[in-house]
Length: 237
Image (cartoon, rainbow, N blue to C red; front, side, top):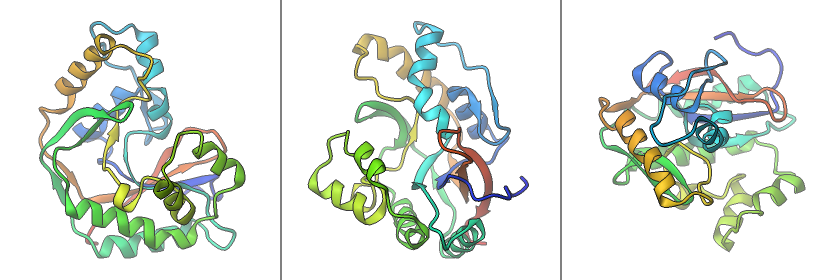
């Protein structure tokens, strides 16, 4: 994809499948949007879920595109640009190798549904830690407005300290690799959530293992815009 010429509002480093692959297409269709082609997609029909409810519960992850977060969205500092981000990410890629994820399962993670490994994967944790630590010098500190927004969700003192240091509360020892399948489901009963669980398991758990062999730069072009996939850099390159 051609490089965007202007510095975007925010950038993020995600784990994302190769566009066009089965993993990419199934995930993007689940959310109803392709962040690579930058277009809406027909969502799968789920028995027992009305389409308006399905669109509502997937609205939050839809804006960010099909991904698992490694370095959460950040504003680039005044002395940084996309090329500095690419250079930093390329250095990280050289230090890590592809990771095969053979046992991703759909489960509740906090208040939402997610696709995540059944056991911790040390290589994933190391990769995410590297992205957080080595790219943070390119990040603008969180504004008071951003801090206040993050603090609307109750944070422990440990999570608050991580947010102040790294721009995001759920990093390093709090990191949990996952692909978000829904937003918060607090207002739904277990009976209402069950069709979503069944449909997600049918859709994702029979796929071949996901090979994570690249890191993806996603951007939020302007405040509040949908995130789009800008480019991918291969691990080990």
